[in-house]
Length: 444
Image 1 (cartoon, rainbow, N blue to C red):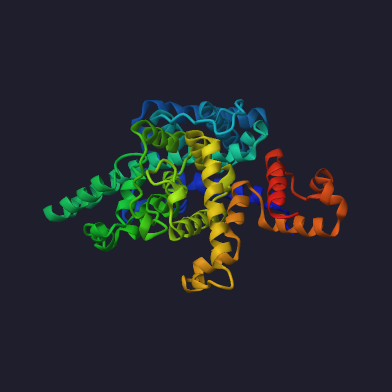
Image 2: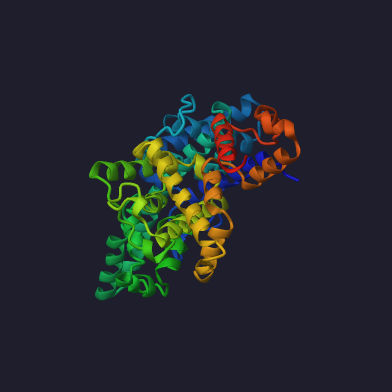
């Protein structure tokens, strides 16, 4: 059986492999076409770009010398040279000597992108060694993954824009005026010709007034919007852009942030890997920066937010290699609103949910049982505690195990250090403090 730490490592390794491959070849490594019948010249930039032409000459000469000097095969020398060159280009962005957590990654230049694209074409497998190299320099595995996610997302944006220009021109050639206008509408509305389009604009597409954009055929492609985007962006990027809001009440994701904060959020998406879609949901569900105070929320509003935050947490644990408590999005919320405010709002929401349970789940009042399965799950399953555990990076099963151990072993009821030493998982000081406080509040 794979241990939790080993599984995390394997998940992150596989996640990077998928991301770096999709960054250069969104449709898959076996696909030469960027869209059906649209081919991007494999070595096009080596022909038209003087700098890349020089890199091609360097690769031929260096690989030959390396093979002779180190007694390597041509393939081994090509991999070694490509890996070293890619590291050299990526060093100013990944900054392996800077251990700071949530360190911003500078935006990759067009020149660096073109060089990396050439190197990927020259020997793609060499890029898979980059993660191990960065891990050898940084002790924080989550920081390693955050920087790699940020860099690969930046590369993806450049690839998508570059591919779109080829696809757009190919599609326009075969369209009449009306269809050409339609395609240009999609290009402008979805900001297809720019890197890091505004995700909020995409969320607006789920409003009823824009439903036809999702349902109608895109130009003359024979596809509606979602499959059209997936056909050339790939699964990961198309899903990142076209995320369905987790509730009808959250269709409109616009939140009340100052212009400075809005600009900082957009910049953090690019340089720190913050998920704007997720941040907007958390701000709404925690009542951060909103005119109506959480204290004044109705029971329905409290349960609604609790349910949606649980869905966000569950979705991240299922689809992302970085858990919520280590995510760039959570870090941005805490830096922006402050640790005290963030914790206060989360505690307030959880406490109000607990009060609702105490009031409604009584012999006198069973109205909650008629409110649907999701409400029953929240009230019956202590979801507010599970949310707090997840926010601190703690597995609910670990808390259950600690509860059982303390109930049968009197020593562990008085000696937390011995109990923590016996845990299979290594806990941080913050996690230990939270566990002690939570047990003091909930158990004698």
